[in-house]
Image (cartoon, one colour):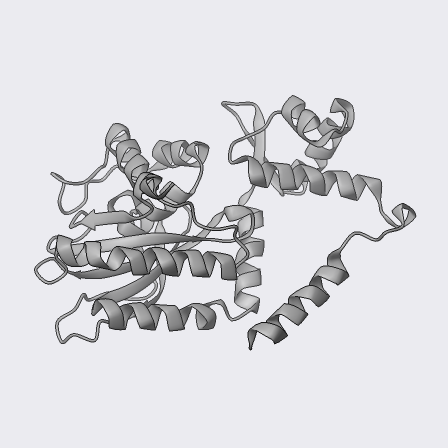
Length: 285
């Protein structure tokens, strides 16, 4: 589909979903409920009834009632420690359904194939699923010797490039939730694995600062990985891409040379899937 056709289709969709000009055609309770959902999606951390009311301009009694309805229907969840609310995983299910409907992998595969040719390493695509990384697509290295992997396998996020990229792209609150529920088993290289909360927070901070994550054999000895997250609507992370290769060939120098292409791919795909752009490393700010 060329850009003109895509632009026309997007414009047509926008016209269909745009609020009608006549306020009489709108349903106030629906408008308010959606305003609450949008606020929680943008917030990046749980919000109390008082904060929701202040952020939407809805009075507290109405906000409380609407939050209760959304919670009962499973669209938001209460966070016990904070007393606030956040979007539930049902929202993520909708995102995935939307991506499936638009042949998501078909749209990403050309980028993965290009990265594999440029880097000469294996490209993986993974998502966070119930505090695990799920590998859902890959393009093998064109080299004779590469990395053996299978689609459908799962991994511990905090010892993988894909996982660290996605954790870094999420909010601090989501990171703390992950730390609370994170698997505690060490990886195959325990001496380099950030399996404790302090090390993980430091690693995530570094990943956010530079815009990409690195796995130095933490999940598999002798394997090095570079990964970036791709964001969608409301700049929420939806998946991550990684370059993975044998450490002897995919040296720190070669990894560093691949960083610009990976960051460009992440920004381009983020824009393609409705994001506002991938935050640049602090050095670029």
